[in-house]
Length: 68
Image (tube, rainbow, N blue to C red; front, side, top):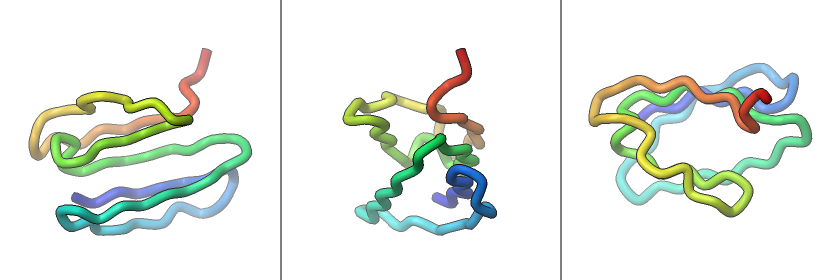
């Protein structure tokens, strides 16, 4: 699964995750995530699981925290 992460106002970066890999990030304002193979990841935000984000192979775009 590939993920592109933008934290606060920092430039985005991409990572490739293998099964069992774990990434933890902290931001003061929030995140923008582009997730390839959304069915292959589990996201926890502020201690809560976001549940299923999509199907296997699906690309999902998230903004956390979500805009009101």
